[in-house]
Length: 249
Image (cartoon, rainbow, N blue to C red; front, top):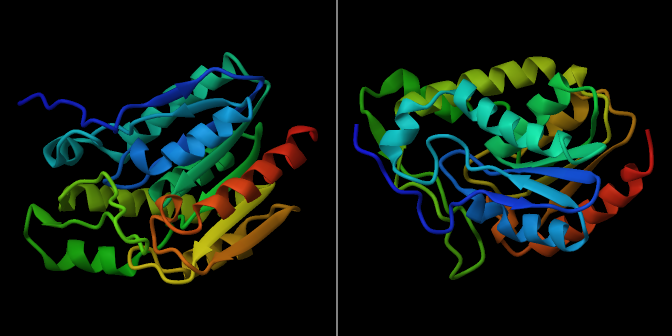
């Protein structure tokens, strides 16, 4: 099997800081480039940051095709373990499938101090339709759904259908475990999103059993809101969230 180089800008981001750690997770077919602004802003405030490159991402679509949802979870687990060796409190923050994985870890680990989910995915009917109606190996790209002119997401130019099936299984599993999440959660949802239906965020908000939860609507961003017009709002509100819940529990 051909070995592909990691794309420039897709490298993992690790920042050693204080005893509060932030696990920062990119989305499906995307890379750490979509989360760099958040990771660096959090790191600038002194937090320890682990932003892994999910297996099969940031190289070539053929690599992603060979990876599974379990591989993506393992990539996050390795980053989580890096943080546990340095931090007494850990938050998760993710975009799209990264948000799905952030929710997964909050359900799986009782010690997660809080979750930030940006256009997180738990139910995308259009993707299920694709797997049921196509025999193609790849479909068109889904990346770079950004309103801001001149901004491009570093993501694959085509999407492996096999990977969509793994994403569907991951979303179903997380959807079924939402009620196991009790930690504080801050949910950002773009009012116009051409990848993940905005009602996903409403569903997450309504289902998690967190005592402290908030849903913030983003009026000037599409799906990749972490690279879009509202990124400063996401950074500002998430930093407030970290301060508020770093001193509890």
